[in-house]
Amino acid sequence: MEPLLKPDRSTYSAQDFMAWRDAGTLVLTPKFQRRSVWTTPARSFLIDTLLRGMPVPPIYVRVIQAEDRKRSLKEIIDGQQRLLAVLDFIEGKYRLSRTLDAPWKGASFDTLSPEHQTHVVSYGFAAESFKGISDAQVLDIFSRLNTYAVQLNAQELRNGKFFGLFKQSVDDLARQHLQFWRLHKIFTERDFARMQEVEFTSELIIAALAGMQDKKKSIDAFYEDYDEAFAQRAVLEKRFGAVIDTINETFTDGLGDTQFRKTPLFYSLYCVIYHRMFGLPGQRVITPKRPLTVEARGQLRDAVLNLSAVLDEAKKDEAVAARYGRFIQASGSQTDNLQPRVFRFTELYRRAFE
Image 1 (cartoon, helix red, strand yellow):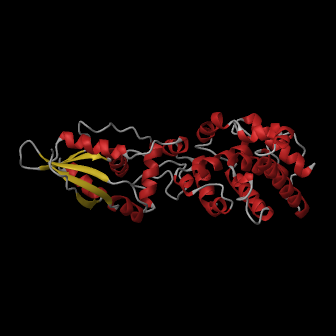
Image 2 (image 1 turned 90 degrees about the horizontal axis):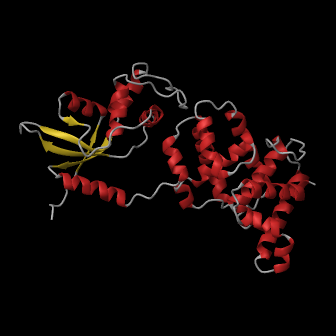
Image 3 (image 1 turned 180 degrees about the horizontal axis):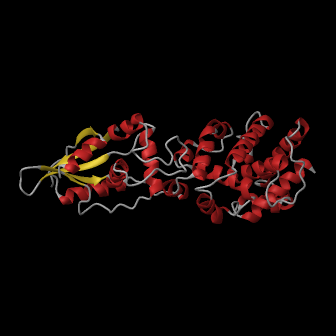
């Protein structure tokens, strides 16, 4: 059995790592480390994180003796890509992405203000250092770190792939309306931890941007298409807030006790209100394109409560289930596909406003 590992917990700055590299005592690419694969947007997002003073994952280091036995070497077990992103930026090897929502977008290290340069070079990286451990122990560390890693869902994968304007917009909107999601019981705390509210916000913005979509085919494409340019961003964000405000005004007691707290039906509710106020792309249903009056909000509330009651009663009343079969099916099967979404939208809009 290998001896018990006792890591030394320290904090090192980018200046420390640069000094060790210049002295030939830093090994950034040991044989067990993966090669750097980060894109410039991903690297830019890391520098943006440092400039904002936000935390990053710790660096794992193995301290070993050099072959001449006269020096100690620091091998990077985990954190190579983070360190290379910082060191390469300081050395002027790339500029920050112009899609960053920050005053330093498009900047090189040399064009940053002296204060911001200091933030980068002096940022304290938490580090776990292991002295004299074997290759087998290094691999064991990797294995144990990954043992407790939860497999990433689709939105978490997008979060690591895209760093541009569309991502920034939906991240901001989802975060700004955290209390809304909680009030109406749309998402649980576990859902928030897995970024489900961000993915859903993406779908709502996509619907406003290009009409209702098939979820499985659309989300990644919009993240990519609007990564570097998103001209409609300000308008759509303002409209998103207006729809959310309308929902709060219409359902003062919240949606938590209704079937419309579920995301498929909430999606329909959002699209109905958006279409009524602004017009949904690709939708032929005639709309006045104006804010909902008190009367219209009352009609919408009644329609939502009635359809919610239908879904509740259908579970125990076969006659109700038969009468509203198509709506029930569209609300319970393949709910994220385009056809059920269009049917639910049409049914709710018709009941509320026609």
